[in-house]
Image 1 (cartoon, rainbow, N blue to C red):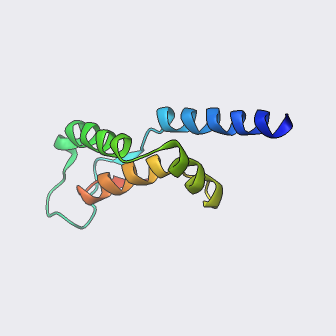
Image 2 (image 1 turned 90 degrees about the vertical axis):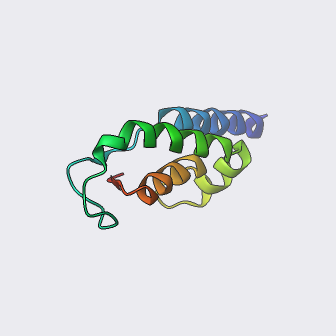
Length: 93
């Protein structure tokens, strides 16, 4: 019974983590990838990266990544962050 409750709490925590990840982006600086700032495209990039992360994440991947990560990141937040960085944004968290 305790294992079931613990598993439910972990599942709810992971679902909360997916919904609440808000990247902190330094919109003034440049990431080094581009010669000019990419801040004017941040809204489109955030929407696109959120879609990509949601489309390629499952609860099991989130759980495995979360349990093995020293910083308690989920698979969703890792994908979201890497997508934004790949588009030239400087993500601080």
